[in-house]
Image 1 (cartoon, helix red, strand yellow):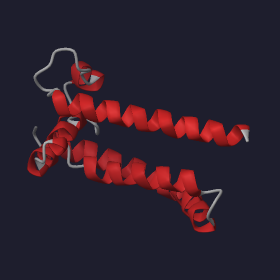
Image 2 (tube, helix red, strand yellow; image 1 turned 120 degrees about the vertical axis):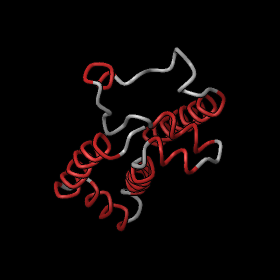
Image 3 (cartoon, helix red, strand yellow; image 1 turned 180 degrees about the vertical axis):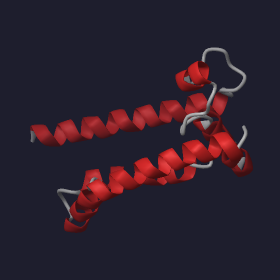
Image 4 (tube, one colour; image 1 turned 180 degrees about the horizontal axis):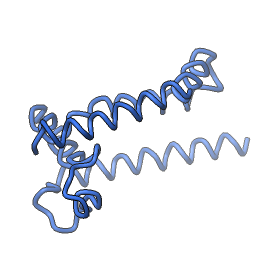
Length: 132
């Protein structure tokens, strides 16, 4: 019984955090506010990291600007899909056998290495061919 309440509490905290982030990014433009966090990698090296532009892309998505989101960080779409898949697999892995298999697949070494390689390739491509 205690584990059930712990799970409900964790889901409630996650929903509240997501709602807060949506509220924050829908009301404040990260490119025009001084208090939003800046990328330390960009500040130190001058190069965009794989996640640079994600805050602006989320803001653009919340305002229905798909082209702006792609311009700021194209990888926001695959990243969001991966996060949703990981959350669904994590939440359902003990309840449904297929979710357990999906969880094991998503957390397998080949998938993790593929994600790392895609991030490195995106890092190089965006600094050479994708000026923001």
